[in-house]
Amino acid sequence: MEEKATVQQHFQVRMPQESDPACVTQDFGSVRLLFMNQQQRRNALSMDLREGMKDAMQAAIDDPQVRAIVLTGAGTYFSAGGDITSMKSLNAVAGRPRMQRVHGLFKQLYNGPKPVVAAVEGGAIGAGLSLATACDIVVGARDANFGAPFNRIGVMADLGLLFTLPGRIGMGRTRLLAMTGRILDADTAAQWGLVDDVVEPGSAVQAALSMATDIANGPPVAHTMTKQMLGRLPLPIDEFLAAEADAQALLFSTEDFAEGRDAFLGKRKPVFSGK
Image 1 (cartoon, helix red, strand yellow):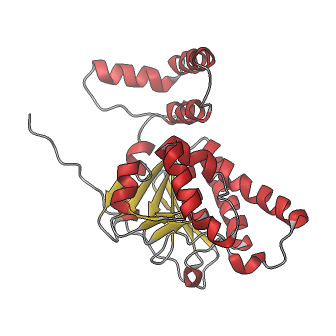
Image 2 (tube, one colour):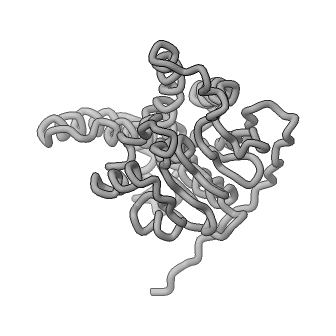
Image 3 (cartoon, helix red, strand yellow):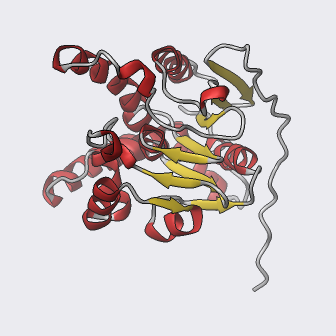
């Protein structure tokens, strides 16, 4: 059987200016593109950027017109990680609330109700990798780099990375990255399961928007349930199957299920309403 090539749409993306806010968004139908915009610092996660991202993510979550989100970095880099210049006066008293504030962003990405696709150009390093792996899908340019060299400044991986990495690459490779600070190229990262789709340099945002558009055209309630179920892992199998039965029973009662069933039987493309 001859395979049909996937047609990738072209989106008119406007790259933010350095004078724009730390977080910039653009809408493409039901997909919202979120830029980290600290270009001169390779999108290091300053406190302004973190707070801007939390606000932008919450706005996307609350907007019923948004069905999928793409997260990327403005300029040529996804994110170089934490803003080390802001860590000079850190101690145990100040460090805990600092981490708790940024944990809110992690929860929005990982536990939020809407699918998030990371589009990585240049590199996702340190907390930048944490952000990427908190997303549902990672699209990476072939010349991008990925790593978790937190140990180089005497700390451990944070922003949920030690939670997300084992599920992607296994415990042994998680220890390897976290304890050696090794930097991976995109092809190796893909072989390990850290990156889900490798694309040509400069095309990660376009590829992620195309993928997110396909997702947004699907059943949003089912996608939310999928994220919630995956977020429950690891669970004992009996507890997981009980949760699965509850969730699927609810989906059987949605208008989207009726539409998908009727479209399949009628041999037409379904149009999902999110109801």
